[in-house]
Length: 334
Image (spheres, rainbow, N blue to C red):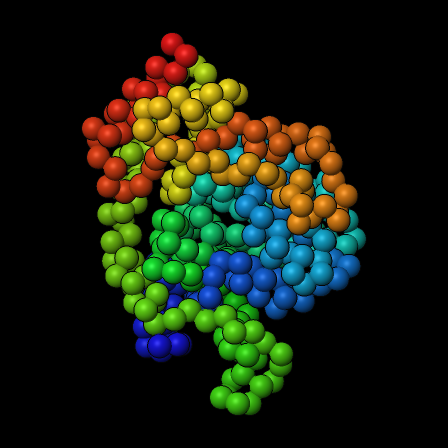
């Protein structure tokens, strides 16, 4: 049930789905990031530019090998601001790691131009954005490697953990296949110190089934997003916005509300659940206290952490339930 026919078939089908040449399954999205960073030779003394408002796994993908994360403030679309990236580049910078947060593609075309101009790698955290596009192309087109998660809550999730590294780099793909399997090309013969990070047959089999329904599931998400965008009209609630030439696969539908705690309590009284993605930006987390950042260092990211709130969003949420959610939101403080 490990690295069998289902995994091999899924790798080929997922690569084809994204118009990519290569796909190697791994155990989870964090492993995808960690493995990609290591195999590109990034390590201690190197810097990688990351968004300041991402999920902490992005940063862990950098620090696992001893490299230093350099935080970049987000733009109005919740993604890394390409206009702020270049000023953060130093002689130690080796890569930029953008994240398509909440499923919305960031301006990877602009970031690719910056990376090319400075000889940097672009390692994409695609954990939330299976199939998102920038300027008419799947986001992985712009990346040296794209790292996906198939965690159950993702748009394209399996029963348990799962991940993949997608690229057009056949050497990288071959190296991933060795590294993920204890550094072994042939059983019991190890060419390097690798890891145990393999996508199993059961997860791959489910993902193959879901891949056949990818368009149908995305159409349902698009329709629900459209319903929310057209229906929510409370001036106290800021709706998500799409960056020019970028699409969203709507992993989450994230609002911004200054009176967030009151808003959450109000929805809860009406039996509507909410989540916060994410309440603590990585630079303020206890795990990264050693980096020495303090509150106020990244005010935009911190403002988002204090105000974002996700409302129910998934394929199959029926129109009557969606309309009730819209009605309750519109009645907040009115």
